[in-house]
Structures are given as C-alpha cells and as structure tokens.
Length: 323
View 1 (cartoon, rainbow, N blue to C red):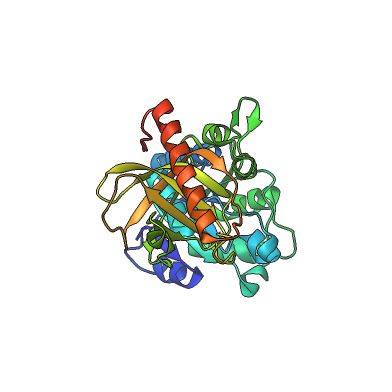
View 2: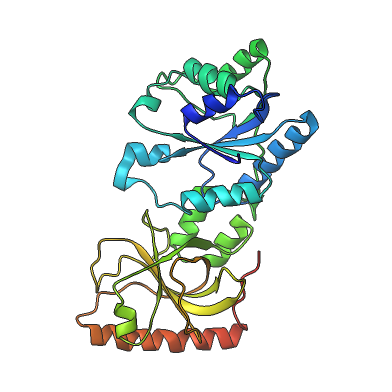
C-alpha cells in the first residue's frame, strides 16, 4: 500500500498487526505542488532519516489543497494534478503518500487534535520534517515549537526543512508558477530540476481538430493550468515513443472558453491514443491564446503555428523528453 486516502483508511491500516507503520515512520507535510528541487531535498531528508531508523518514509498531502478550499476559483493554478504528484513523490524515493481530505470537518481540527489523531495515533510518527514556519490547526496554535514540545513527551523528534536556492532564488512552488505564467520555461526548468510536464489521460474531445485537418490528443484538466497559450512540446507515449508536436493549453476561447484543457497535435503520427496516459513536455512558447472570429481563421493560424514549431525544432534539434 503506497497511497493511503483519508483518515479512516489510515486508522484502519494503523490497527493491522502487519501494518507497515507498526514501527512508526518518518514523515513530512505539505502541498508538494510541482515536486521541485526544494521538495526533492526535503524528500531526501525524509528518506535518509527513514532508512537510518528502519521505518517507512511518508509524505502527507491534502485534497483539495488548503488554499483551494479557502480561496476556491481565486486559488493559484496548480503545477500538477493529484495523480501526477503522487507518482512523482513515489518516484523520488518516498515509501508512502498519505492524502487527507481537506473539508469542513478537517478544518475544525485543533493543533493538538491533529497531532494526537493523525501524527501519533495514525502514523505513529517517530521523526517529523517540517519548515520552522509551519502552522496548523483551527486555533492557529500549531507551530514548530508545539511539535517539538509534544514530540519530546510522545516519542518523536522534529527537524527543520532545508532551503534550496538556484541563482540566488529560493526554490518554491510560487516561484515556479510565476516563471511558467511569464513563459520563462528555462527558468522554471532550473527550479524544477527538469522541463515542465503535464501527465494525463487522453480523452474523447469534440473532434474539431480532426474536422479541420489537425487531429489532437485531448487531455482534460481538472484545474486551471499555470501555462496558457500555444507551445512546442515533446510527448512521451505509453510505449516509450517520444514525438514532437504543438499543444494548446487553456480555455479554447474560439470553441467554448469554459473547461480548461490540453490539446496536443503530434507531428507525423496517425494512430489513436484514447485511454493512454501521456507526458507532455513544454519546450517553447509560440503565442497566447486568441479568440478567432471563425473556424477558418483558427485553421489558418494553426497552420502557421505548425510551421513556426517545425522551424524552431529544426533550429534546436528534435524535442526529446528525458526522465
């Protein structure tokens, strides 16, 4: 069991004789949006300590993210979806991901109630890695000092997270998001440690792309993306093939302008991708989204986008995703 969803499932797991948490764990708490270089340093802290103690490493995240719960549509755009985040955390070396539902009931937790019910009774935490500015609990009483005090009497220790900087800039999800929103893809890549990618399942769309001669792989996005516009991309398919293409990400203002989506046209590909999960790597910004007065105008612009993308690829060398 590498993903635990909800407090009920956590408590059920903790009561099992063969529970992987029987000897406790080393844990950290946060949004981990983007799983950037700063997050990976924290993950290494947690994983190294867990190995030395002979217990599992655990990352605790929340759905929705707290800011999304409180701010709704005004919350900042996500860098990655829930499934992609879990996959990235596990791939980075974490043993288990605990996802707790952030709702009206959960927000009522006092700081001490959260420590007792989740950290001690649920996770049997033996070591906790959190920032010294970490705050929690409806009473706002939860902080690093309280964790240290309770931990000293309950058998767990607390460690501050390490800070990572790139070119003098502290690595954070907010900074990555700002770089992406400004289409500074190379700067975002430096903070992430890899090119920005979105991973998702190809679904049936309105087939408009096929009708106008540029069939696309449609990936439905649950949240508004940080990127908006048309980009040169590289897409890794489930079989491992990597193809160059052009992607439109945003609200498709000419078509409907309501549901955020990612539409990818792959050059020199004639098969079907429905149901596949593909990785889309954003390499170069071409233009902003534009609402055209007619489908014919849209079709003409798409043709120009393809020409511009091929020229960029020819100048740079074929786009190839690396993992």
